[in-house]
Image (cartoon, rainbow, N blue to C red; front, side, top):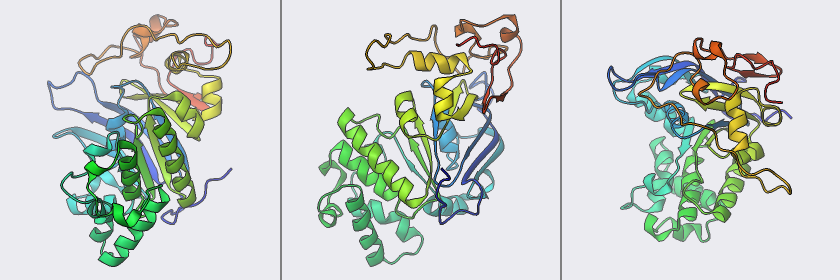
Length: 332
């Protein structure tokens, strides 16, 4: 089904990351934090970015807002609604964040100023774009009601410590959607919440995103969650995209051993399902720069070529995989 068009859309992708490489200053890392990352999100589309901790997911999504490590060397392009994020000055970046892209972080309490009222937080972006205070307040009440906050008018006068974690994450989502951004980036937005609250937050997030035709980049380590809500998925390992494709096909027939490993270590509740099988070894740290495929040391299917030659991300079926043996059927 074709995703609905966002009011911001020019007919193309709302997010285009093309060949993004990010390196820290000399001596701080042996390899790039991001290495040639390519990723797109269309209007109304939900795209998952998955991988273990340290794979580069959060660095990639923060780059969308121009939040880069100090003195980092960056090449490639990041375009949001057609605007080149990496080429914007501070004022233009502030305008982009106020109008075109918003982010929901893992911990809602780290996103808000504990000394300011919730109303100030939710209306801040609107007021920054010149919306009159009365209109911004009315919009904030509407959004708080939409995310399930009871007594939204009263909630605007309360401080963050008066909300539970789940309620505060609803407030953060309301603030993120206040200006109807073309793109919403959600960086593991349910990690700090209990399971019941996680389900409620995901339902709210996906409903509002679909209603507004907003592109959603959803960062998670939970493959079951990605399978449930994402149209397409990108799998990251050691700063590189190692596999991407439509969600159903990628999870039913992974081409990269790392994707298969992530799936095998995901707990399942199906009757007769095998117990989770952890991936051997440990993720590559930024202090390591192994030759060849970064996953080779943990891969049960690695051959000599894997330790000598970096595999390119190439088309396989309807998706792409960076594996020398992707077409050999080794994962069947």
